[in-house]
Length: 483
Image (cartoon, rainbow, N blue to C red; front, side, top):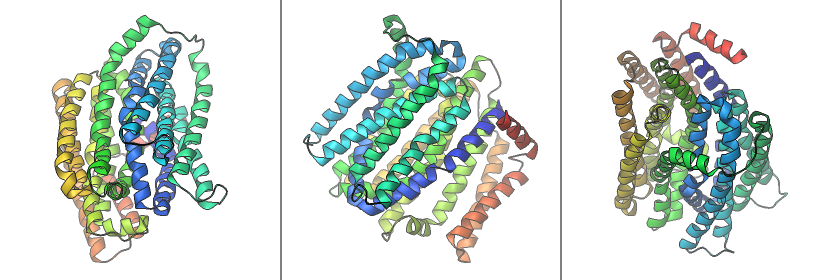
């Protein structure tokens, strides 16, 4: 199972590295540079606002469906037949809530803000439907099919948005046109995913089985509650920043610029978590030893994430100058530091949070998330008025650290799972050596491109010398890729 995880993780990361970095840096970044910090700040705040009620689009059904199919693949047809109609009802309820949120912010129905918020809401509807379709692929262990759909929507977005950016076919780019291009990409991906899924769920007959839905919602409501609370402590801060600070749009725009690299990492880490959860679930059901998979996931996720953080922290100014047109001052650099540090605890949480989910310790995750919300909301309420995006960044870092410490503690207490001292020691040695190398590169004034190449090769060499990766294991990985 370890080799299977690494093989599929390798495949999904390669596929996404070919697409999603270009989306983040070649499209999304260019749009922000083109429309300006304030306009993009409004878009980013409304985007995060549209994320807050997305628990209605999921209601825990995606995680429940994924977990159930991983253990009982023969139930695919009956699960889809009864969950899909419920999904449609939840989509309608979500759109109503989004409209209510717009009205509560004082938007008029004909205003640009309302139109943008509705489009962003529809984007979430189709994005979550695509995730629902993909839970069938991962639950049934159709990982290569899932890999294809993990990049299809962004590939289409790149094509559509490139037309907006680099041609005058639809006039100057705006955040509303940007959101609309994403919507068309989501619709096409959702329809194609449904077409490919049909052979695996036949025969199906739509209907509301009240008894089954009652069972599903009874089992899935903890997942739904977890989704709500995670959305609150991960996304409410930007909405608070845009609302509470006197220069809300500008501060949200600055935060978005600094958050972009974190978003890029999350796109890959979420995919890894999507592979881990069904694998953990099946291994737990079959009473297999999960510790080797946890150790491998730590090496595959946390170590590269930590190396990336080191590189970003030692190359802040060159990196930001490379990404954006405007000159960055002390404020932007001060925001960037805590935001980029969030990558490390988030990478850990994708591992240990997935394990707790697969082991059905949802109540524990909900308790952890509840305290994370308190820390995040109270911290932002105190620090946003005075410190703006800087305060939001440090509150986010503290929140992520507390959340992952809780997950690690309960994985150890409930499942007797922890990272070995040997791996932790090698991890610390590697990070210290990489940090020292980066300091030396700055001292001799090496350009950012050569520094990136050097750190990449140096990290790979150190992982080999420290025996964190073995050539024999990679041969097994490539065998799984061929199969």
